Image (cartoon, rainbow, N blue to C red; front, side):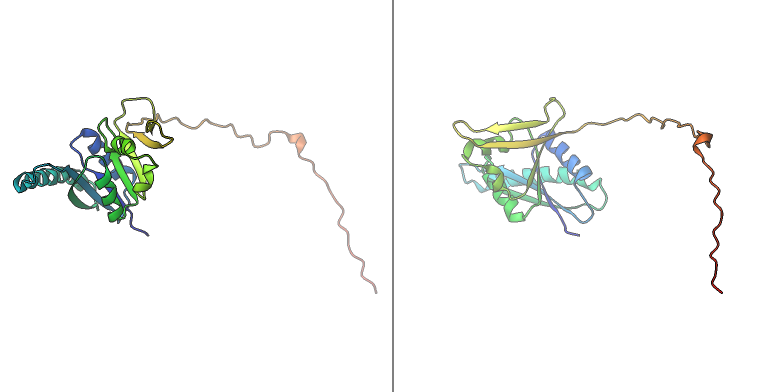
Length: 201
């Protein structure tokens, strides 16, 4: 069985944790690898101390996501923390480098998916070379969203999966009356005389 590489974007928003929990319950199979990817912003000042603090903060945030993974048995996880832009270019490059089969993103108003759609005038879905699942909190009624760039025919269709508990009442199957002989006249008995072959002497 092929091992799937599932990349989950780590952000300090609740919907990102919801997206991780959804992936653990619905996507993860035995032997699959989950990569917790966090990209912290690039600063103008190249102060090593500030960069070290940003990297440490991102790693600590990823560790809190890993604690969620640890509640599910047989979960293999790895943490990747990198510096890059907040428009999605660095994330797309890292996802391609990892060779992910699925990218899971918690969709919110400041999501990099919107910024990536506005920055590129072409189909940005090809940048990831994998399936992209954009998951949001179950607040709106719409289940699909289309991102359009101005003065362009580029549309990005983001599948949004609402998380909610479903309670289905237990309905017993209807009883079907069973009739042994519904119509006695439908049974026709035919008696045939047995034909014996006459042997030649």
